[in-house]
Length: 238
Image (tube, rainbow, N blue to C red; front, top):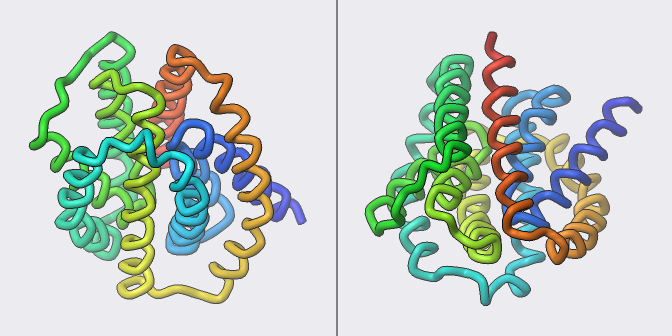
C-alpha cells in the first residue's frame, strides 16, 4: 500500500510538472520510480506515461513548436538511440549515472552564472543525439534539451512546445527499442494503466499552472530541476 501511494504521488506531480513546463516528467519521476521498480520497469513506465502526456498535449501546443529545430532534434536522435540502448545493456550503470550527474551539475552551474550559448543547426543535431542516447539508456531525454534551451534563452512557450513535440517521437521510438532489446513485462503495463487516471488529473492541473508561470519563475524551476537531477544521481552512486 505504501508503494502504491508513493507511486501515485510521483506520477501526479511529475505529470503536473511536464504539462506546465514541457519537461520534467522523466527528470522527476525516473529517480523515484527507481526506488520502487527495477531499472527496466522504471524506464518503461516513465516512457509510457510520458508518451500519453505528449499525445494529449500536442494539439494545444502546435503553434509554439519551432519546426526547424524539431526536425534537427529528431534527425540527430536517430544515431543516439542505438548508442543509448547499447550503453543500457552493456555499461555499468553506476559509472554512467555518475558521469551524467557531474556533467549536469557543471552545466547547470554555468547557466546560473549566466552562461549563454548560440543556437545553431549543428548544435541542434548534437543535442538531439545526446537526448536520444539519454532516453534509451536511462529514460531521461530532458537534461540535454533543457540545458540547451536554457543556454540559448528560449521562451517558455517555445521550450514547452518544441520539447513536447520531440518527446512524442523520442518516447515512442525509445519504448519500441526498449521492448525489442530489453523486453517488457505484464507488470509494467499494469502499473502504467494504473497511472493513467493520475496522468489525466495532472494534465488538467498542469495546464492551469502554465498560465500563471512567468519567464523568470520558469527559469528558476528549470535550474532547480537540473540541480535536483544532478545531485540525486550523484548521491545515488556514492
